[in-house]
Picture (cartoon, rainbow, N blue to C red):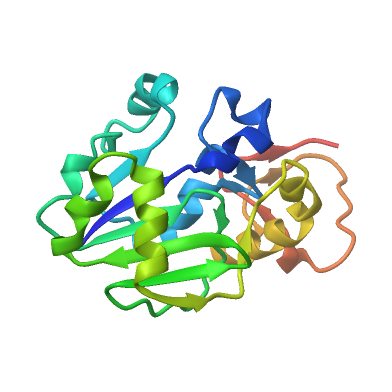
Length: 199
């Protein structure tokens, strides 16, 4: 199965932040939305990123291992399309072929068979994808899809906590020089072995 992580028309609602980056490059917590999605997928190798044309050269430089805006890459296999505004937090998701998952009115992901891929990628990709999502089985997903630029800020505390738990590293492993006071449980802090902490 091939994966396409896309940005949709809502990108303009994140201006000026998304004028120079894709929506999936918004940082939420410790990592980018893209990193969270890729981690959820098990870091697949066959990934296509779909962005605005003027951003494509920059995105290609940032992610040389991924295909950018060449939707023909998706032909010949089942495809999973994922909205780049999705805040993935390790949800257990079981999506079947020819199924669309929505959160409120936002298309979160669409999985289609290889026979349907060409119908989606030929012509107006976003419009075709929306039509295909309406046509196939539709289900809802209790998750977060960012709609406004202040939402990542408002959710930062919650997402950082999730990222810290997912990261799985805890404890004081670096050099602590001088008197440092940690308020609370030391297991809720991580200091890398190469770090030096000064008062």
